[in-house]
Image (cartoon, rainbow, N blue to C red; front, side):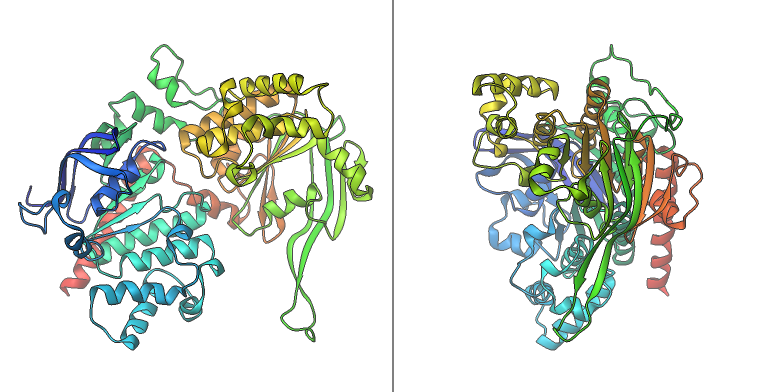
Length: 580
């Protein structure tokens, strides 16, 4: 092991039973540096991280190779340590921030007590000292109102707060290596930016080394000094971050770089990894401009002065106050067009979507769909009209019935709305829908848990199409997907729009995704539309819009070099503070 290396991995192989999922990868981590591990879901990123901590779930096991931590003797390698010895390594030598904090936080234990457990595990301190140290860690992790959060339970915190809580727990033992496994997936770009900046600051302040795992090379580029690219458990590339962005050697790496929608231009179609793995394909961006607004025809959807408020009061004698989730919003969508809606979590995007469909009853305003006033319809009439208005939700797993096969999920809406003359005819239509979303017909007999996230989202799209709708609301449908799968889903939506003339209300917190999909964009903040139009990318008027744009990782060489320079300056300043 080199003098500056804190961790070395050679020919690591991991198997689950007889199936090998990591196939001989090698890398090293230097003191104070960040290693980025990038790849699609199933590439082996997370199991590699878990193997470093000795946390592989059964029947997973390290089937070959070597993991050497600098603090251990040459004879004591992580692969050969007993559980008792591994417990000493975890927390003090290495700590991990997991992708989904809700899964790893105890729902019945107050947040402060969970951090105190980590402190008392690695040091002998009194209860009062543990509380004071916990409050200090909350401040260090950027959690304001630390005393309130100390007594709160995980379900009372936002996604960003729970992730900061996980960071506080991870740094409690002052680890030498911090492993961050997809710590910003599905978070708003502004919350993501806050988490990334926090990790950079903590790394410099505590002189830690870090392993940062993500499927997004744009994010990894801003965080890492070196990058390891994985695909199907195999090592595609291991190089300094500038080399990855300047001259990627592997077609797979070039595909990952190209999958993310560019922010500086509008393109007709996203490139995918397949475009790069097959050398005969055209791999150039085809740019396009925003179409001129055509208001000659009638819009398919008109929303006028819509308000959806939620009343609240703590005690019966108190005057009721209101949360104005949607506050006087107006817009229209034309057939064959896409209206993008962006904003941070809690700004009212999803409430607006559900209000348009009257899944949530609005307080005031008019919703005119296909020249019919939805607000004046009874439930029976509204149910019949909903056939023409469909919604695709963010998490397809929670919206698909886990107990029924995919075929029934697709044919059930047809049966309810009397589409098709027989079960056999409906099944044939379901087969065509699967073909339309580029899935094999054999999926009809599968259950949701047997599919990947991208496949489940394609099933949700197929189900929405099963009723031949005219309007589809897409509510954050690609926010938790790999950039490569995201590119395929977005291209699919555009193809379907062109074939069927669909109108989309496309909701996302990612302005680069919205730019690719939309003909016009609305920016929402605190229930109001603060800015709209196709020109918000080139000349945003509102400071809020500028903040959203600045928070997006650009993912080019210039951004990588700028981020690296910032990290070096920050590290240098903390080194001087420690010396002084």
